[in-house]
Image (cartoon, rainbow, N blue to C red; front, side, top):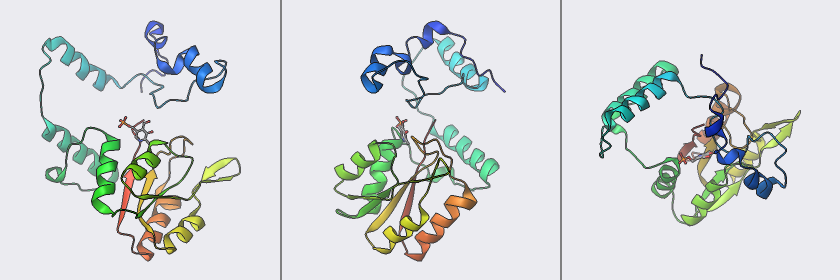
Length: 208
Ligand SMILES: Cc1ncc(COP(=O)(O)O)c(C=O)c1O
């Protein structure tokens, strides 16, 4: 396990999330615990910081390209962790999660098709859908016992209307902090998608 305390105060003072001007601008106060931005709250794992230190010590920073090693690692992790077999030869490198989602929306739907999101959700999803000329279909999360939940009934109703071509599932869900579990959320959602023969599900998986 690694240390949950950041030990470099000088650096943490520079983080946007702690910036009192920014906090006052967004929330009207800086008297709060700043969990508002998609940042790590823990020091990174030693294996990652060691790899970064090796790069720094190398002292040259030319462009490099070694996707295959990364693809193999991702495939091997998915296999070990989720028993999911992925072929590294089928991977494609993209500049970021959002550009990947934008490409997938264009590839798997037509102009005007519905793309379902479950608000409150990462605000960029709406922008990506609208800038691709697709239509946002919203199935808001519901609150049960003080916790956000997927509204599976609303989800089914939206799918039955036949407009939804893509579902953007945010998991873990930014900003509500839920991790949707296989049995309670994902399998029922997938089963509903199958009943209406929706052609594609995109997992807008968060990185933090
Ligand atoms: C759900 C979600 N997707 C994508 C992103 C953006 O990730 P990146 O900047 O690495 O493309 C964020 C960033 O906060 C996010 O919350």
